Image (cartoon, rainbow, N blue to C red; front, side):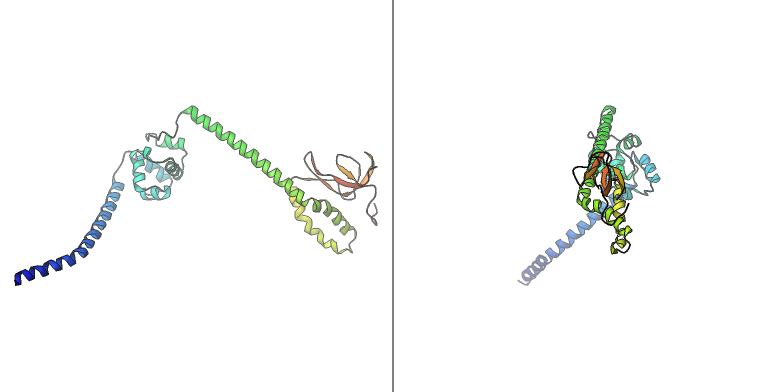
Length: 264
């Protein structure tokens, strides 16, 4: 009977200790797996693969000390780098190859020449005709983007000018008035208009006439204050205009007379 009780107690103790022991065993197993994986990875780095020599030459030129540094900079795993070292790049994605080529400071063609023994995946063409067609497409795309950039710049300049047109056409006359009548407090405001002049200069917009300048009336360039002014008649520029090359943005406003109190 006592032997039977002892056996029951022993069984009870064993049942209580089994879960803790299982957890400890599982943790230990995971730890061993991690240690093994790390050791295997380190061992893999130490093995010389078929294309290590050509890769190391390039890495030395770029101060990339080891495979781990190459993996870190290219965003590849150690396994991914090992695929490259083995020449099995067909298992890498195009994006991974691009990142690797960038780190090695090579385009795809240079990548192919430098690692000529590496079989590139089928997505990357090495056909000279196809490569030339791709180059031409790139050139056409670049030209199209440049044209769009130029058009957007022109549209922006003209849209901005439309917003500033009233100020731009009025400020030369206001400045001239301030300079002619020093007693006016507006004289100190002249310097405030310098940024506008710089803006126009950077856009290559040209002024049409000078404030209070006497010119021959030209209906293509001038806007008269009365309808009976005839072409070629001498008039005064009251408000300057602006042009963008041959395009008239705003005609100069002209009159037969100068502002009251202003002598020629």
